Length: 77
Image (cartoon, rainbow, N blue to C red; front, side, top):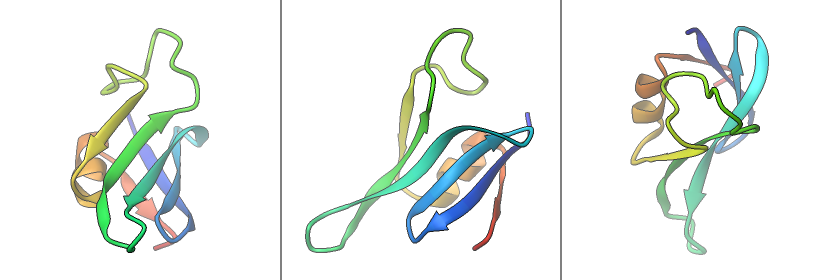
């Protein structure tokens, strides 16, 4: 499935599936500004969830890992 991440602001992306917003990918940071990881989260976790989601949200160490898992591309970087 062709996912696209559309940048909203630093550390925040809309997650689009076939041109429709289905979720978000956001950066998790500490109060000191250190990046702790990234989260891909669906807006609606009602079954059936689009692949590869198995739950409403998934955590990743890097943005690149999230994009690879989604098989997607990033726009607006």
